[in-house]
Image: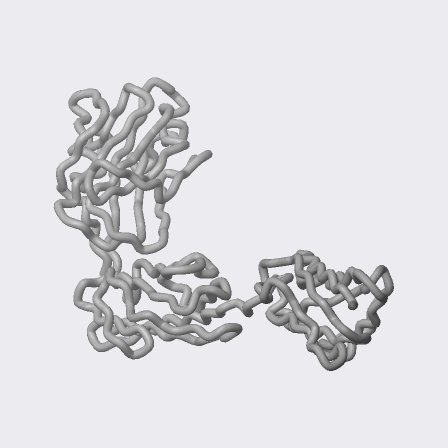
Length: 341
């Protein structure tokens, strides 16, 4: 059975009117004298539970519980929690209330300090805010993880203790990823792909091949009970965008082999050469197999046979242009001036 963890605990407030001290809000008594009365806005009352508890329910009891009219009930108030009494998180808010009691649940969290914030007074007297009882109830500690992060990419959906299946996508250059799981309870044991990992520490590197989608299991065992999270990790397919040649060579041209100067380097785009006969052959290979080729000699389009061009030469200088276009639209032009003797 759930227990009210705030009963008779230490209470402080931004302001109060005697004899309606902060401690009255957690004394368990339900009389008009056992209440907190605030006269400065915005105002708040905070309770130290004495230790951190897992909680999931809060209750506010207002003046209607003492048979007062509903216009003595607070209409708006907010529940905030903290683990250190410094950093506060808003958990729930009430607006437009007319009921005598607020009894609401929220996702299970761990906190030690609990605060009710009020911005205005009761309807019958807006200069005063009054609450009879403030209760927060403990809950079973959730099993599994309180956090899960990945070294590259982003989990989808965002991590939540109750969500068990995720995806993550990484770029084609990412060859491995790690996971950092954090257990909700320190006694839990965690495995990532069957390898034990300390809570809050990075896992072993998990290899991903190009284009691969790999299913990774993260198991959390708490008091003999196993909870398993599954992540489908996908590495992108490598996309080449090169507009370079990886080979450029001349053959044929009679008894004397044609020359090419300087020697081929993919980032060199201007060459000269000689040939003693016509035609010659130009062999080319693109660095990216998906790139396209377009070649001309003296302005006449050359027909490719696989990656070899048969080039008829005129006497004197001949200008050969080989245009390489990558899959993403980058263009390089290799220009070769061949002199036929």
